[in-house]
Amino acid sequence: MNYLPERSALTGDCTVRDEAMDFGGIRASEGVNSIHAYPAMFHPRLVRQLIESYSQRGDYVLDPFMGSGVSAVEASVSDRNYVGFDINPLAILIAKVRTTPIKKEILMNMLLRIIRQYDKITPNPPVFPNINFWFSKERILSISKIITSIENIGNDDVQRFYKITLSETIRAVSQTKPNEFKLVRRKNPCNFETLELFSTKSMKNIKSLDDYYAINRIYHRPNIQLVNTLTDDIPLEDNSISLLITSPPYGDSQTTVAYGQFSRLSLQWLNLPHDADKKSLGCKPIAINNDVTSQTLYSVVNIISKQDSKRAMHVFSFYYDLFQCVKKLVPKIKIDGYIVFVVGNRTVKGTQLPTDVICAEMFESLGFNRIETRVRLIGNKRMPHENSPTNIIGEKAPTMKYEYIVVCKRIK
Image (cartoon, rainbow, N blue to C red; front, side, top):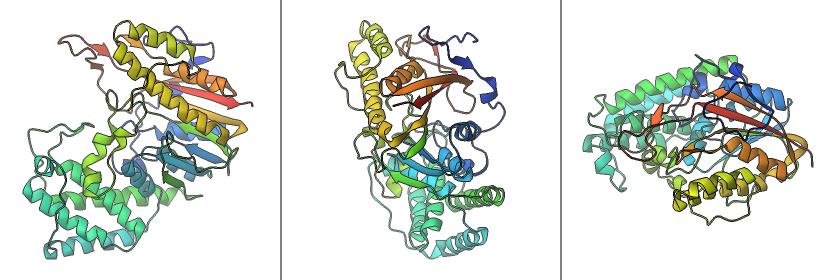
């Protein structure tokens, strides 16, 4: 096993560095996955390899933190039945668009119709907080015209396709800083006309969808649902899932990826719930207790607590919520079925959180054996090489470089 600088000494013998899983030089956002950016996407080649290694054709695959549906695409073209959950309505829309083949002619005709109607529409702009801060008056009017046309589309699949394309356009023409997941106001506005940019993005997405499904067949239409695995009932039968594969958040949304902020403006325009960050893992602080079956977690929380007890409680709250989700999901997995968690080990207060070890300990307490942990270089997720965790000028710390693929098999 190669030594990894960010690695905890708590790792067991079955952790190995696997360079074949890096997929260097291959973009995650290729093909149909180029439709609408989304934070911290799975690498599709990695997902395909894991699905083929730990499930069979016709099996049921579950992703309870589905995001934009990379696992949905890969399961559907690999002849697996698929169920995916997420708390973010924008993620649900993106996943459904990526996994729904639509004839190119239908989409092209609808785009022409939207363009022709544009100058004839009397817009009815929405009202939501800070709309004038993020959008100019001209942008508000132009987006309103396009969304009016989209809402009049009678075909649900086609309507979703153009809602997602409009969402991409909304992000581009807003005053938000490009390539930022959080809402940060930018200095220089977008110079493209709204309709022109919407048309360009529509053509790109039409081509991506058409090209992908010209060479890949959807065997099973995926079952994609807006479900909060922390608070909702899990709409699955017990012992029905052969493989649970997912990449849960690296931590709470305040200090890691703010999925809710990333989606908020689009969801406000589409009149959909935009409170994902308020429902995410660790969003509500929980006093440190003995209810999580991971001694490693308590070891690192104790170290952090000596520096900052409040921060330690936030760290614990995230893993506590994650454990509650796992406990609800385990009964859905068949005996001899697999859990595959792809996680990152972030650093808090100078202490690395060995999430892979913590998760393995959770799974083992719930009737699983850890088969192996594979380690891959993160090359496809946008993140800085350094950050400033202490907020002290000049003090920097390296961000995560590796992902840990934890593979466990249910034995009881």
